[in-house]
Image (tube, rainbow, N blue to C red; front, side):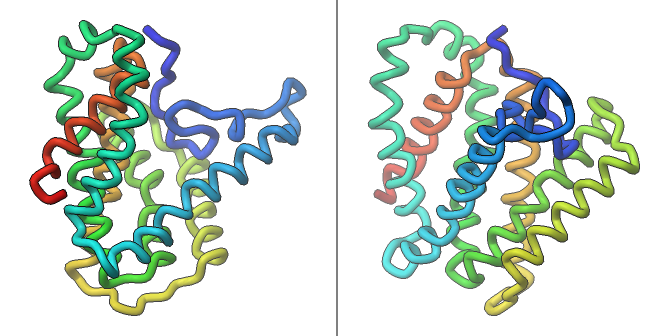
Length: 222
């Protein structure tokens, strides 16, 4: 095992339970470092939707996914090769391929396609429902009990995101909503697979393999 915690959709830490979601030793307040990490994650998480919206004006969705994954592969692959932990990867390659499809190959194409029609703010707002979908999945699958307090917390968070970014429904259609819903489902289900079935493979190896597989799939469109 490599210290990867199980998925927690309670609003107090998702996959990986970063420091931005942890309370200090006193249990009363979030630390300054936690707030800084929280803000940094928010910026890093939100910017891609804006950049995707800009890029789709000139690039085909499949080409954009290829460029995104190919660049990541060039950066990550040498690191993973040097670590020499491929035996674990090969043993779980089919499951990693499923993870890649649910977390990258399918959602990234659908997200880029949707952003050809909807605004980046609406796309980001739609993806904000991922914790709700994840909480529902873990509850249905029996991994966690989704209590009233957790549900209220998730809904309050969603309302907060809506207030911050607003609702710009320009260009929204049934097709784009369906695309974003599939993206959200993939983003919610894939971390569950990662934490439940791939917890004996190092994180970096899983992500790198998934990125490389996705790049290979979209290589003909590059």
